[in-house]
Length: 272
Ligand SMILES: C[S@@+](CC[C@H](N)C(=O)[O-])C[C@H]1O[C@@H](n2cnc3c(N)ncnc32)[C@H](O)[C@@H]1O
Image 1 (cartoon, protein in one colour):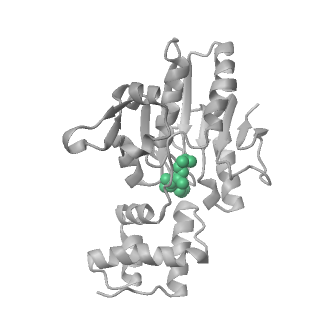
Image 2: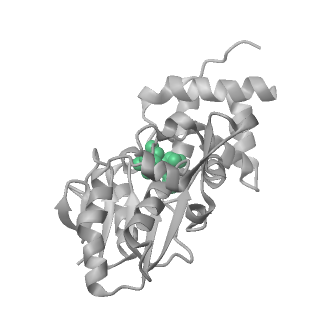
């Protein structure tokens, strides 16, 4: 079967659906990307047109087709200890505040966790900071994409993904694969046990979500328009403990949003 070319009106139908279901703003420049990703599905499944695929997605009451489609279009680039300044801030500023307050439990939410590198970096940081104390830490790791959540839960990565981590931390927190798993590393179980995984769509209501000392909401807001960003940030505000923080990506900011968070440093805001 040859490649299909998506028309402007078909692209608009798909991008409207993406916006409505995920908040992601797929602008016209993403047309080729959408076309090539959807083409692969059409070819693989023998679906004859974009129209047929669209109908399949919107008519599926289980929403499995929709989830698969979201897996297809979401951008999941991430790496361990990405944007290190946040981890330095946790160590140099936040941990001291927690210890000074005598806090007994800390809760952190990685709200667009992709394949898990972010929550595992958080868990390792917490172990290093509080491992020898009575403080109990837990992490919620969520994403809209079921595909990346499955990867996160497996916690197995090609070895080169940890090239930027210092050798001592690798020894403590990762296990090297042998035999058929040669070339892969696995996050150790005591780190994995600190994390709960959940599919959460940031544009939908947050059910049964507690409050957190820090919410990492990094490198996802870049895909949202201003009203969507503002709506999400204000919802997240309600789930940050007083004195807690929200971290956004270093190319993102809360500038221009009507929000109660107070600026601390680039990409870092506090709930007072
Ligand atoms: C580029 S990754 C960022 C991963 C990580 N936070 C980091 O900074 O490395 C963006 C993630 O946002 C997720 N995402 C996109 N729209 C979302 C939504 N509406 N709700 C929750 N997650 C979403 C994507 O599935 C993807 O895994």
